[in-house]
Image (cartoon, rainbow, N blue to C red; front, side):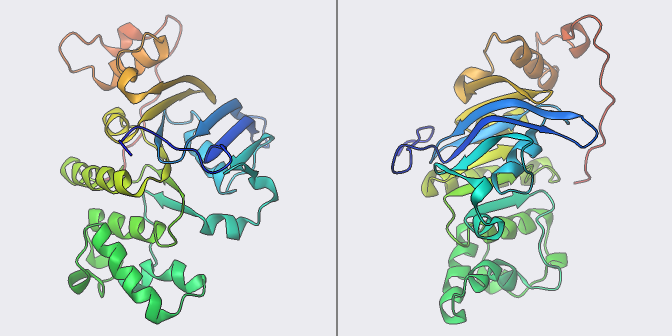
Length: 282
């Protein structure tokens, strides 16, 4: 199937669906405001937006790490509200920036955690672990016995991705997976992930602040502002969209390019600039 196309699971249901989803904190702060969104099988959908726009909150509703205040979330046509959280999470791959690797487990054991929990005998899980390592570009003879502290940031992310794929989940959630990597390592990881996803055809929901990453990896880009979807576009149309919020985002990201207006000039009158956020170290 060509990159950028998608296929619905049997019955025509999207892989993930958010129906009129809202979320407010106990203090009354609204983080998501009546969101409707569908993520198709075989497609990568990127969530863009400034910090605090609701991207991660939305993503974490899929595996019930956050429960909506109102509305409903569906996975392959079934509401997640009635699903056992543990069983649900075993069917969904989850990759985060910090990788979440067990520091006292070596690489082989970290990747093999999911098959072991599922009851797969060691004799069967070992070949699967080596297959996954090859899939993410790690030589098993070199890396299987190493521990997380003996790996580079990019290598740890490869292990985290392999573990997320261990149970062959139809859905993959990725929350800023490459945000802490240096630009060259990040580009290598993006190349690896793009080729891998083209082969595996997962439904992927990717949270990122990086517009270029979203354009490179996703077939569709969703822009959030203050908990609302302000744009939902094919990635090929995003940079040239005439939606004001999209134009402002593109200008802010690419303001060093010839002809780009400074972010101050693009900001509507009366809107104060947001305080800068501290970047994670590479």
